[in-house]
Image 1: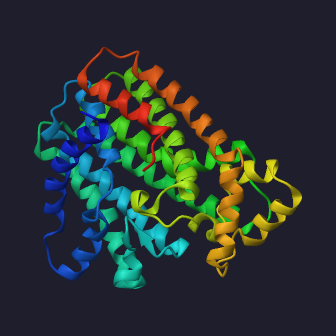
Image 2: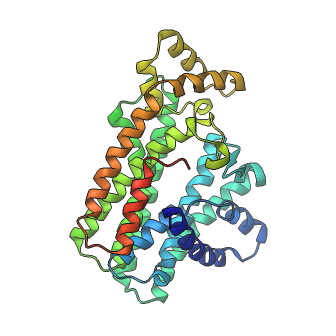
Length: 330
């Protein structure tokens, strides 16, 4: 059974639980909030949280409120991110603000944010004690703050004419992406009753996994198949995203190609032909593979952390997921 087959099983359990949070009036608001969730997503964050908890003996069903909390929070960030980036499509469907309008999309995002904490508080209805739930909520709060800090930096970088250094870019994606993965591993470990040393090791695993995941996402935004990724190729170019891929391309191509890329980067009026030409320059350079190699090194470090824990089915699923992370096509 592939890791994606494993994820489908966990996803089905999470989805059955998630829907219960969106059956309420006014239904049009809840429809807007649930819209992205019902249109897919890999449920990767819940998968990591569930297996992080099960490594220490937690039961899947008892972890579902926490898994729902991180997935709802993740979708909140996507709704608001799409508004800020003026993205028109995600997961192969129109984005929430395109489908329901910007005012309703903002409300839908706000509701998702609140629902995330409602789900976390529902852990108190199970076997978890108050001190554990407080740590869960603290992890969600910290992740929310870091995502906002990362998004602010991303907007500032997009406005600037300068490219961030490699270190600055890593710091950015650690805030925007790794923060929620760290929350997943910490929450799972806390609910599994892990000791502080194990929690810290899993936090570092989540940080490394998030960095790897985002680097590959940056590559797929340029080289991926839209029918698989659910996002149009070239969006990052139009939006002027100063990713590590683009930085490496600019360092390696001819002056003519560099000028062509810079003339299109961040130009929302760029024609499809111009975008296609720039994508061709990027794909034919060594940049995508160079970034994939960095992602692979990160995934190997993350796996080495997992291998310090006793062998278990949950641990091995996290290892398999991490092995797939740097080579994935979706």
